[in-house]
Image (cartoon, helix red, strand yellow):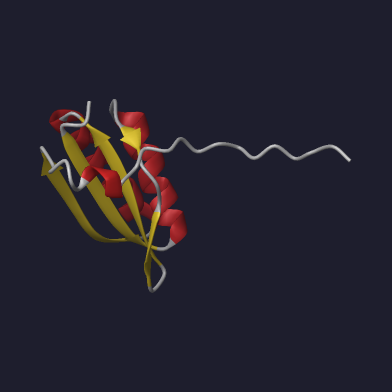
Length: 100
């Protein structure tokens, strides 16, 4: 499943959300953690097989460009095992509010 790593860096959170949404809807990839880059930039990370990651990054970039700015994008086929722990695949979980 983790044959490739795709990263999209956007200017602004909204463009990053748009990119992430399009990426995960377009291909069988998993979304990694958001990375705050600084200067209002956000990086999103997707992992999956090489073809799926390419499709996801392309879709994510197009979607983000429609509402904002894409700073950079990269696809890394067969990333080093030492690199993968830096981009964990933690599912986004809704926090439950405790009843008072």
